[in-house]
Length: 91
Image (cartoon, rainbow, N blue to C red; front, side):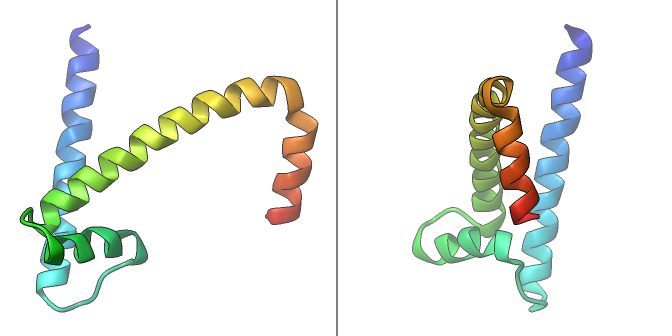
């Protein structure tokens, strides 16, 4: 249990540092990446800062990925050849 708490702590620290780095790059007028464009626009329209929005959007992406991975695992068990064929066509 203690190892999981440590892992999640490091993970959250990494997301916070990532958000801080994106905010610094944007403030230095170096531009934004496509993944940072949504938090960048939201920071103009609402009160939270760019770093706070980046943190929240990244957490939403992670939650969405967890949901998709759970669904894909179930789907892969039943339709793995179809998924492999689709991935081959799009790759």
